[in-house]
Image: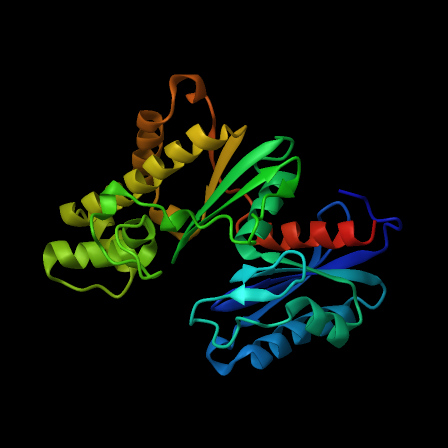
Length: 312
């Protein structure tokens, strides 16, 4: 990644998610100088989301008047055309987001060069360039939260795919999911059993007692509920089996796993790592499976690193 020509200069970064939008001012060395967050008005439509995102950047620029901001890097939910910066598709959490000219609109609004990438890819770049996998040439990143996504980084560059849709790891078949319906309209996909809503649904199916979300399952597992503990282990095993298959396919130098579901703790991680070992080829048994180290800073740092590149 090119260093800033002037140490006093910086770039802005945005992480636009379904519930929260974060912005930061970032140096060429990956140091976050300032940050701010706001709720994403996803149900209010694309214009409201863009207003919020641009407003956060404007707020940071006003607070950092002595530090020139030279470009903007954006990590956004949805399938993003990495060439045009346009949103190709998105879930209903962001109403009307599909078709949004994210790069062009923010460039006109803020007067800055803009790069745009999917948020999971941005997270992967952050970990590969600045985080737990820094210095490794090939990195597989897997995010397990309300959905399951992935990214493969080679030589510091994300493989976005021919249709900019690479990384939909949650929509591969999983034997753990049986014939459960998936959010994509298919059946038996990993996301249906391993993502947060999938695990909450599995607990409700087994007990007949609906729960609000995954936090409720985690709390019950911590209180000794055996069914909740089984569901937590099931989720880890399902992700681990999928990761093992991806390791066999891609042969990465390291795997990084992040996302909210990883907060289920040691039992989930143990089930994941056990499943990875069962599935990987003997020659790949030493590929490390690492926990994401940067948390919510990762997509900001990844997006910022691309902003520096556009200035090269």
